[in-house]
Length: 115
Length: 115
Image 1 (cartoon, helix red, strand yellow):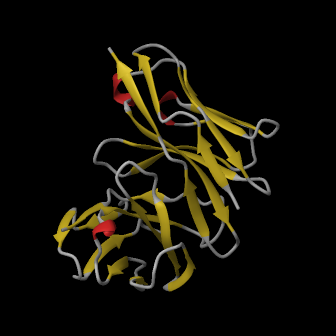
Image 2 (cartoon, chains in turn brown, purple; image 1 turned 90 degrees about the vertical axis):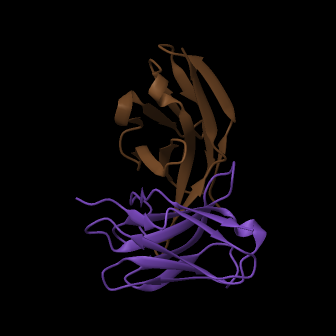
Image 3 (tube, chains in turn yellow, orange; image 1 turned 120 degrees about the vertical axis):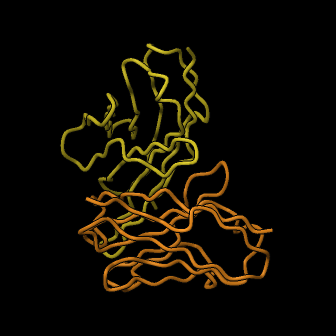
């Protein structure tokens, strides 16, 4: 079975400093991995996805993630945090069995951005 | 292009009642998935519909049921509501049924409170 583990439940950074949100995955085959962001009282927005093409994936709003098979990691980074980045971030693996595309979510990382 | 919409936004029910939540998928999408997000947790997969047929189900009891209509909109029905059913219910649409690489686009959710 597929799973993801988000290593930090809360991360706090200062505006203008780098962001690192950590995610490890477990998969018996080459996974499809996603990062979604959820702002308060909002639905989920896709930041980026990895589907076995380039290992460095660029997403929206300056975010990117690197797929490292040897480390089973898919960490999310951004060079410079903005106040509007404050939100909850979910690392997600797709358990696509050919019949069902089921998303399995991590427990989330709450990012706080201090002025 | 219209995104995923859900109705109602908020709903309050009492224990034992029944509820119907609605979702309109993004234009061109033929697959709808439903997720339950309890407070402080990541979303959990309930089930998925592809071309009007249920093609996958998570670990939810039969009192959670659904429908998909010819225009690919969908309903989630929950019978005999329990207090633990209080959550944000998210609908996501995609194209292609079970392909793990498909991106799921989420609606804003319906907040259900069971008293």
